[in-house]
Image (cartoon, rainbow, N blue to C red; front, side, top):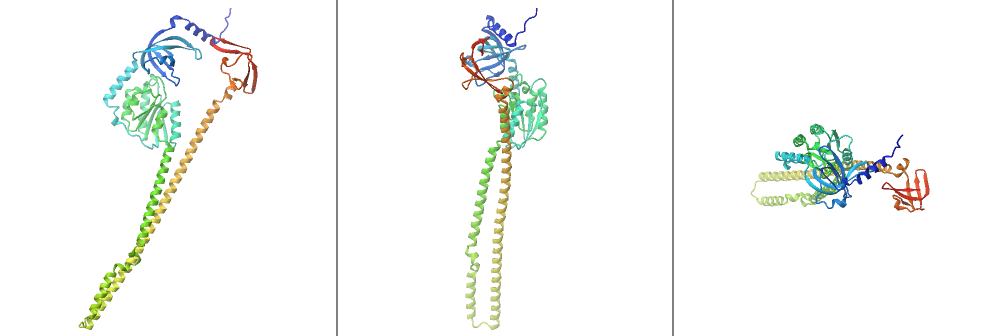
Length: 472
């Protein structure tokens, strides 16, 4: 006699009812170590409880965890009280925890604390050893897993904030046995590449997933590296030995990228401010030099240089007149004296012409210097405008890239895509129906499909195996 096959949902629902109907599995006390803890915005706690041989998924809803006097973290050893159930959507067994209390510290956490204490005493975490990050890195080394979400987050952030930087990738395993040695090898190769900064990143995971970053050899390699290093490992609450040894620790891979490079928009704004200040300073200097030239030009000495020696000329004339009054001076000596006076006047005239030529030359040189300064400032402004145009062009390309990414996401999440796979949208008076509570019997509903819509009437409603169903 052949047996009739049953559906997966029927089997899973049977297991759920069996477990929830077993009094032994109600209010059960379970002791284990917390791992893979997630606390979303809803406030619920999702985690795994494990020992040395097995693990089980757990959930503690916000209404229950509010009564717990502490916030657990990965590695905590706790005792929970709750009910064993089955999560039907995933077909997985889980414990719905009602209470939690600490029960010591997990083995991995003890190992981590012991290693952290040892390395701290050796001086690997001292602040004075940590290197300063460059302000404008142009060559960046990225160490992370190949084709991972953390890698994509870093590349997108770097392209958005600082697209002019060159990125060199050093892919390596970031989880599992042997991963620590591969990370050390990649880090040493990157350190020999004369890069401005190194990013060591990995997405979130459980304490076990991130354990390769708690390696003693890796801590020494980070400490001995000559290149500034930023870590972005796991989530904000995850701290590894690599984070303590690094020069800067960021909370996520995206945070590491944001820490490594400046925002191009902020740099552009700063450059514009510098350009404005430079132009003002140059104009002020030109105005000052022009005022100085005009002042010198209007000076009485430049207008009438004979004033320099006018007093000496008057004195000489006076002496000449007095000399001519002496009648007892022989005629030949008087002639020699006149020749001497004429020679003096000639020398004085030559000196006057020389001073005038020298003053004209100085004025010409000053005017030429001002023109050269203006030409140099004009050329510098042209270069800066060209650089600014290139930066604006790069920013436009980056924005267009982000727009294309958003358009692809919108297309991927479009309900029309779901309709192509056989799904439909049920509505009642232009209001989406998501539960049997949204409609009443004899109501008329609309079913929107990919090639049109159907109008149907609700004949009856019934709940089947804990789920709401509607017969049309």
